Length: 328
Image (cartoon, rainbow, N blue to C red; front, side, top):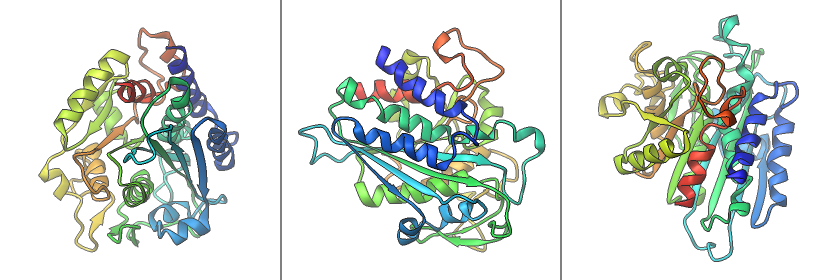
């Protein structure tokens, strides 16, 4: 348990640091330090390499930032697992999210340094795999950028071609996290052919409204996988709750002007579900994929659990659940 708390503390510490302290380079340093662990290698892509990968959605979000984007890749390959198809964990790493040109109301900006909570979850998990002795090949991928305002910022109405080749109409510049994740999910599927792929993101305010700070939203086409994760979440006090994810929701992200829209066409309804539906287009097999929306759980301000190790601002949401799942 002490090692799991160590992993949670790592994620919690990252989430709690303000953006002027945990900037892009600082988060990259944290990821690179994982390369000192047994059976673990790290590689970092910056703008040139990201451009070569045609991760145009990630670069669009990054277009208003003074710092280059980054994709951090951590590979954990214990002896005897070299030929395995890995479990891949993908994290949203928005160092700060102003909302872009469609700027957030001022009251919603104060905590936007926590928008890298998904990347923090991935770093926390990857930081202890060798200590726990996980005998599975695991890859962690973090898409890192800011969403800032500049003359070069991407705009509402822009149409951008994703790494996968699907065109995306930008309906809202504050629906940026799914753009970052989309290119990272596409890269993960093509590069690693994962046995399973989980992503973690402080993605939608709609999830916080629906589930509060007690439950992370979860989406997948595998009911068996959801059921297993729900039970694991109960055991670890890292609870999740499934939200609608059916054919009608998936249809709602189609665009008249492009292949997809990053906002869906249900106005303000079912925002967490349409975000997940957007991401599903960038995963090869949605039966092997789980999306965790940790917008309400990555950092808690209003509600407190009875477990002291989750009572600070950053919580390490998803870390304990994922480690227990890997152990099982």
